[in-house]
Image (tube, one colour):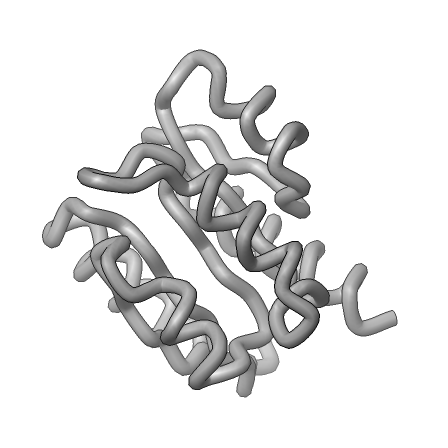
Length: 125
């Protein structure tokens, strides 16, 4: 399998989930910038990642609101966002805020990796 050279911003307020996903994505060849939800928009503007993988429910903020802000900003509007959550309304939130895709939690690693590849291919074609 060809390893990726893409950069992702990974956002979750659960340190264990953040660390585990960062390891998986790094092993797949992605450059991973992590955030706990406090500085997402700054990091996205700073690093201009190829994709943002973002939890919907973050302490003190909301992944849907962050996505709306990223999509409204001309500098970040074209960066795809995949939301992830176990929340029952998460798929509706995904559609309402303009995110590019949704992954249900608990995450299936293979499904997550497949979805990332699919979204990246869709946005680079």
